[in-house]
Structures are given as C-alpha cells and as structure tokens.
Image (cartoon, one colour):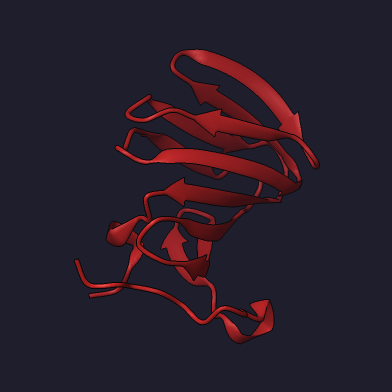
Length: 115
C-alpha cells in the first residue's frame, strides 16, 4: 500500500475551506493511511445528512450547538462535548447554531481526498 500523508505540522491558516454546499464547509488537517483529522464548519440550520461508513469516527465540538443522532439515539451537544461513531453506524447532525466539529477517522477517509 502506498503511504499517503501530510506534513507533520499543519497551520490552519494555510488551508482553504472546501465548500460542500448547504451551509457546510470542510478543511482536511493532518492525515496518513491510518488516521485523518478534519474540521467541519456548519452554518445554523445546516444538516449533516444521515450516513454511515466503515471508519470509526470520534468528534469534538469546537464551537456551536448540534443535535447529533447515532444509531437512532439523539443528543444535544455544545462546545467541549464529543461523540464516537462506531463502524457502519448510521449518524447525522443538525447545526442548531453556527458551529465547528473536529472529526477524526480511522482509517483515513480516502473519499475526502481530491482526485
């Protein structure tokens, strides 16, 4: 397997936001084949549509308020809270205010990389 990796040190100010549409933007931070960290920005009312993937995901609410649903269970989370999504569990988010999530995936999300 070819090693895919970023530099060891990444400066947030050097990364452009990728507009994903519908009030959601993303920055890919550090990653290699084993793990990936991303910053996801939501405008109030934006929805992270329910989806699943084979990656384990853990996320930190950097700012804002979100309603998270994982495997049919919903909770309101605010800045400083976190959540874990096991492999292949259906999950989604609704931004109750403007906010930012820091997502970590293992293994890395190759589907997030530009072709």
